[in-house]
Image (cartoon, rainbow, N blue to C red; front, side):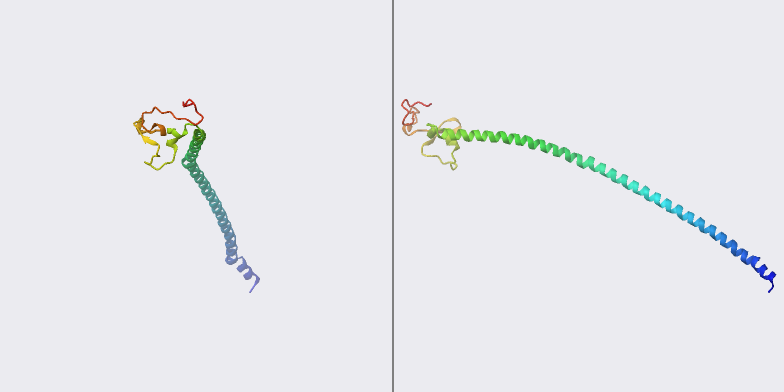
Length: 172
């Protein structure tokens, strides 16, 4: 083969077509890479937007939770605490009254008239319907038991009793 024929083949349609094909292919690859990069950027943007929507939804859900659940519970807790404070005050007052009553009962037991005291009779722990020997039901207020002393068994209410050291036999 001659030099001109070789040159004809090289510069002919085959090599030139190959060269054009390689250059076109490079441009096509660049274009495809550019489109892939654009698609990646769009995917990242969509992902960021989805994350933003998720955060907005979480914030919205949190706000709804706080408004509908947490705030009413805080209000109820505050009211319950106020009721507890009031109950503690009432309990303290009741406790003081009970202490005063215990002291009064303790003092009443040492009174010289404690044997015939209707208040102390009411405070005694007797089974229902059982009366001690010296207590009789009388026509007193609302069926209140009338206490009779040993000397006043006839029921006329004229006998006045007292301790051994009591000379005038009058209540204090």
